[in-house]
Length: 126
Image 1 (cartoon, rainbow, N blue to C red):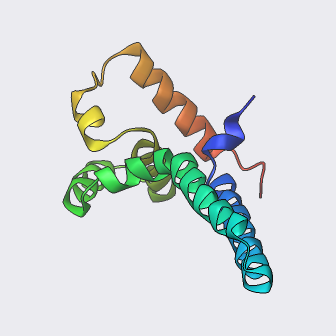
Image 2 (image 1 turned 180 degrees about the horizontal axis):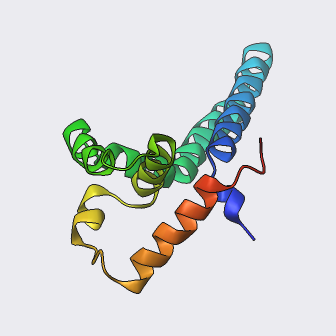
């Protein structure tokens, strides 16, 4: 039901929304010089960090070398687009530590891979 929360477009729209709120408060502060707009700006920045941090945390945790090692294991397959999409799904959902500790043969991980593959092969948006 809430699959849209994991999409990149949702993150981008949240960023734009927070920037609009901050811009509006800056404009109002410059017009009125009221302290309440500074508080609104600080609260909006704090809420934006709180809301967007989980989305970026998984991307931050992966080094370029770690990403390359995961990507190199997938290059053996013939479908590079599917491979890149699957790797992006792993980067989004797992930090490097979580990925290294997870049991790759577990039913939960296999289910995740099946769902990610299904989403990658779904061309309903195009």
